[in-house]
Length: 84
Image (cartoon, rainbow, N blue to C red):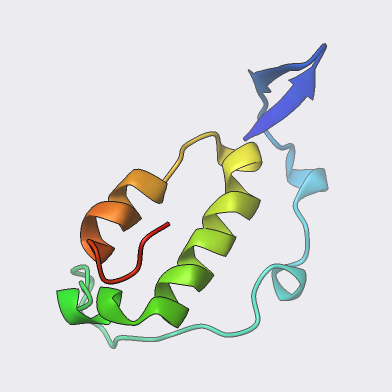
């Protein structure tokens, strides 16, 4: 987590008492069963511009909080089908 201090992003660790309620953070959970390996979407999903637009919107919201930008990765996956 990062917080702005004097105009700069500084690392910040949430204290347990500061954790928000899980219900305020998510609207649903996807359960893939007892297999704990990761599940990767098919590359074809990144040709759906509405989906890519939503991922870019979420990236813009999370960038100031977590400090890493996923837009280059999204651009690579979407290619020319969904330009920035």
